[in-house]
Structure formats: structure tokens, C-alpha cells
Image 1 (cartoon, one colour):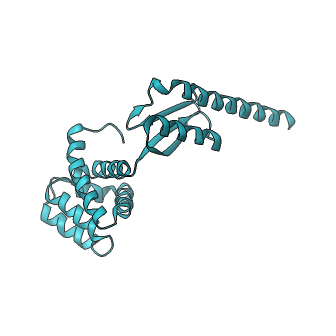
Image 2: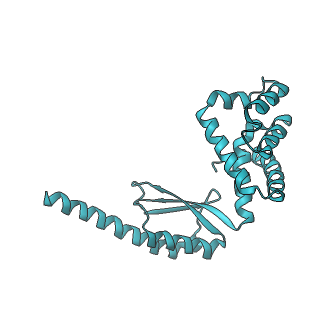
Image 3: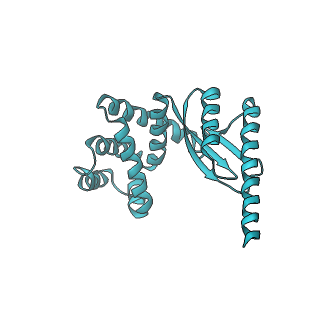
Amino acid sequence: MAKLDEKHVAIARVYSRAMLDLAEQQGAAESLLEELEGLLSLLAEQPVFAAYLASPVVEISERQKTIERLLRGRASDLLVDALQVLNQHGRLPVLETVVATYRSAYQARRGEVDVFVATAVPLDDDVRAAVRRLIVRHDGRRPNLIEKVEPSLLGGLVLRIDDRKIDTSVAKDLRTIRARLAERGSLEILSGRLRAAAH
């Protein structure tokens, strides 16, 4: 999650935790997360509708009717009801933050965490497994790796959890993983040169 206004995050947490509690009671926590993320994808593709939902100019009652007309029967009642509560309290402008805090709370209750992994070369299975072990050993949660290749990374590897870089207490483990990535990167460059020379 990108850096957000702490006030918005605090507000979003209140709603997302209430939504998660209710969803868990109904056995629908995971499906609600999928619906919320799907809604965000839809809003990203439909910026006019996203602006409409967040607009302070649009009357709450008008937005309520629109939500009912467009979503009731197409989405779960749990999602539609949650959107109506957010609408009634003027919180639809922080919907993206609500979804992010819902996801974090959902993962926390399951002992999981998103880990953003930026590397100079793509991870192979051995390095991926080493990163997972490192996170479990130092953080205690099961990592969901979100991988990004950034060839410009000189260090070879950057790990972020909860908007923070992995600290120096894992420096030795990170050096080992970085060395493996650097070796792979050198091998890929060398094999590319050999292929080019062969042609």
C-alpha cells in the first residue's frame, strides 16, 4: 500500500475490520476480498464512475439508488450493503484505502503478509524459496511474494513489508540471497554474450 494519510487509514480500518468481522461470520471473508478487489479494478477502468462515487457534489440518496440499481443482484449483498454504509457515512472517497486495510486485516488474521520483492533479475525457484524462508524466520508470517524485476537495482534485491524495507537484522541472509542473484545475473549476461558470439 502506498503512503496514505494516517487519518484516512484510521477511518478505513474501522470500516474494513467491521466488514471483515461480518464477512467471517458469514464464511465469506475471502470472497468479499475478491469482490472488493474486482470493484477497484472496475473503477480503475471506469474513472467517470469512480469520480461519481467519490464526488461530494452527488447527493447520498442519489448514489444510494445508483449502487442499488447497478450492483444489487450482481454482487453479493455483503458488498452492496458495505458500499451503502460507506456511502451513508461519506466514506466512498476512501474506498481504495478501505480495500487495502481489509486485505491487510484479512491476511493478518491468517498469519500472512504481502512482501514486495524487487530484483535485478527474475527470481528462480531456489531464490524464491530462500526469500520465503527468510521472511518466515524473521517476521513469523507466511509471505505472499509480489515480484518486480528492476534491472537498475545494483544491490540485486530489495524487500518491503508493510511499507518498510527489511531491516539490517537480516543483512547476512540478504547478502547470501543477493550473491545468488548476482551470480545468476552474471551467468545470464555471459550466456547472452556467448549466444551473440555464436551467431
